[in-house]
Length: 300
Image (cartoon, helix red, strand yellow):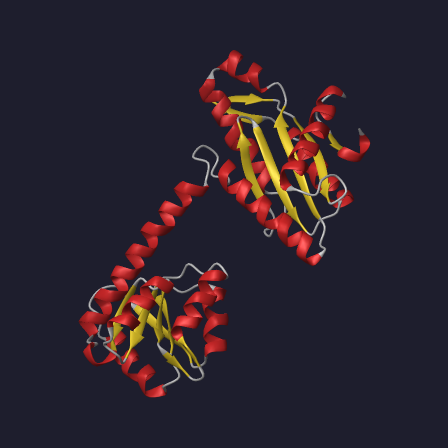
């Protein structure tokens, strides 16, 4: 299957030339797609689905440097190779500082040079993505880690304040988890955490964030969600974990439940740390009331 490459360039002739060069690649097959304007290019780039992007410096009234900065600021991680008719070092450096992974001078482009540059950019992009995952993901469960959770919660709390949107936090803890480790060993405990994490992650929407907060505790950051909706999510998590035994490895199937605490912004806290404290209090109230349930901070 051919890998899709996006060319953002306002010159149709450059598209034809690049298309001819791509057709002469000796390695992996690539399919070139074209966006002729800054606006279209930014939209296509943010849609994803491209293995790499070739971006021209000159794009009408705006330039490729502005587009790179805008795309990166909006979370784009597609590897970008910058194309320029200028050989000035300032342009090359500016492109790399903006987020491009490589650059080519148009007058020096050959099929071999273009293929090598794209291969390099895609490989480097894969490496950077792997490093990002190591920095932001929990190794055992694959969920976001505590540091990334803290960053996201702060960011979303600021966004909620700026736009006046609701925001909710759900803290979830596996009931009697120490008993699992003590009775069946840590490998079984790890297997339980992985499966509980998988079930928890299936309940929220794709726009929400799911993290391993620490130990046997998980956290859900629910965007534009009020307390009632967050409590519904928390109860569905509890029901999903309880609905069937959790594989514990070596053929074991263990009956596992979780408890959850819910806090809402701004009613239960104006800062992210306040929300965590409120959700934690609600969580331990759920434990005290018999476990396997969700409790809101307003119910204490």
